[in-house]
Amino acid sequence: MIKTPTHLSVFDLDHTLLTQNSSFKFGVYLYQTGKLACYKMLLLVACYAFHKIGFCSFRRLHILCLKIYFQFISFSQLESWIEEFLDCHFEKMMNPVVVTKLFEAKKSNHYTMILSTSPCFLVKHVAKRFQVDYWNGTSYIVDNDKLVGIASVLLGSDKAKYVKSFSNEKGLPIQQCTAYTDHIADLPLLEAVGNAVAVNPSKKLRTLCLQNNWTILD
Image (cartoon, rainbow, N blue to C red):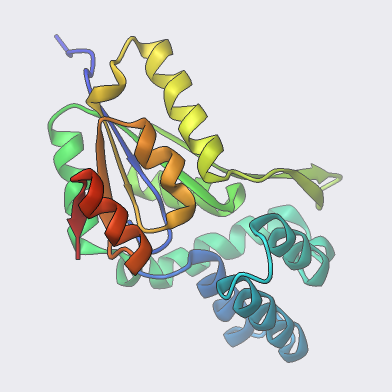
């Protein structure tokens, strides 16, 4: 008899399960394979740089990426390129320390979940390769095989709500939920669960980890 899981392990994607930002790496791949013009790649790099220094919100970053590139190609074509990209780079992008934690969670019969602010169409394909039970990401609106807008951005507060709702639905005490993330933006998620784990945290997040006795993975 298969036992019902009594724990949940939640993983952020970029710089947590993966060592890099998957969306940015995908953009580089598109440029290197001739699918993204040089000037568009430069625009995307600039947008990402502004986001990293705090001058561009997650939502604004997604909107700009959509306007610069994604709205001009078919969604079905985009998904096929994602598979090609992952065939080439998936294993090389893995963070072995955190991926080991994912495999351990699976072996211990935990529910496993990926929650990422990255586009859902990218998160979906990565989640499939990791074979997690559940996943979610920033939702895009698709119409007539085209990406035409942003439905909702999955922020840290949304991740916390998602995990709380999931644990209530499954009858899991929130104390039996573990979350892994690298980003201070996911602080609401870390505060919501019973076991918070920061992966290569920034100085600010590391300080909070020490104050709260949260686990740090470097």
